[in-house]
Image (cartoon, rainbow, N blue to C red; front, side, top):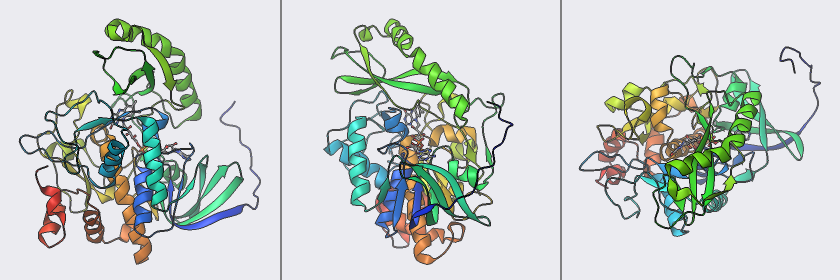
Length: 436
Ligand SMILES: Cc1cc2nc3c(=O)[nH]c(=O)nc-3n(C[C@H](O)[C@H](O)[C@H](O)COP(=O)(O)OP(=O)(O)OC[C@H]3O[C@@H](n4cnc5c(N)ncnc54)[C@H](O)[C@@H]3O)c2cc1C
């Protein structure tokens, strides 16, 4: 297939599926909290997702370890993820959907509200179930098996999207669009500037196939995410490639899927407790760690994280280590860093918020905040912001950030120092800063 050849697609009239206040593209750990938050804040919300369940990497790629719920700074460890991210875990615990993470916290916690552990292994099936219930309960309109394929622009504003599914090609209009596709598909089509890691400058994190095994002893020494008698292992790497390119994504999938049984044989040498284990599942999508990063109004940097820099427009907190640059499990030396609202506001394009693993960031910072416990609160902030924009009749870049922060605090989110200051002015953030 020559990439240079072109075909002029004839224009045609298509149906309008609907008009919504907020349209969320992608139902991963960034997208579903965004949809829930938007709907809970009164917005008529649609979420589209190519798979028939939510979770994205967490479920479709079997990334069964969610970490980063609290910092590790002694003595007052702070739970840096609250709000919807915490709610998901609490409901998962209630549904007996958590297992044993390979990354335990230094201290033990009760795993009650406000006292969550650092990391959780999840039963990916229970996760699908719990999250679907939460999205339904919030009153979000859901379209599964639906692929985002293009944007509807008016000048530099996104007015809607084009979707493809069994019903054909249709248009959807939305007052605010949230790109939670992980790869920044909407932003890319809308013309938002973006960057992708250049191999020689800062190698991108590898894509890798996670796989689930069973058939190991009750007492074992296996590094994986355990749920009952199943264990998810980090499997073969696809190498440095660009998973936002269809051919490279396919090549990567072929490589890891052909390597998966050899990978288990290798692991058996390192971890003898796997001797009798066999593979029971691989997800439909290899784990894609990073592709495009948008250029936003602010690009969060590794230095911001290391210094624990404060931002007036903070919407979430993170505290995960930056393993590849600063050592394995070396936690940051402060209580956590803040993530500014401007990181999800793309340059050049209006009516669009971009959340998840493609938000505006440099490589070092990304390697910390990409943890799912950090991605969920940013999604919640985006959904809340989108709903407030609709209520106030403003664009995301015009939104009063203070009003957004107050709303997030009312929802029980943790947003850092700014939250503490707002709390002193009378809102109910105080709880967010307590030792937990
Ligand atoms: C191998 C691997 C190991 C990891 N290890 C950990 C770990 O131990 N702990 C941890 O906390 N985090 C870990 N992470 C990071 C974490 O999983 C991700 O950063 C996070 O899941 C990203 O969430 P997201 O919602 O931004 O993107 P995604 O999970 O990619 O979700 C995007 C969603 O959008 C949908 N979508 C995409 N394009 C379209 C389209 N065009 N139309 C419709 N739908 C679309 C996808 O189907 C998906 O559901 C790991 C990631 C990988 C890949």
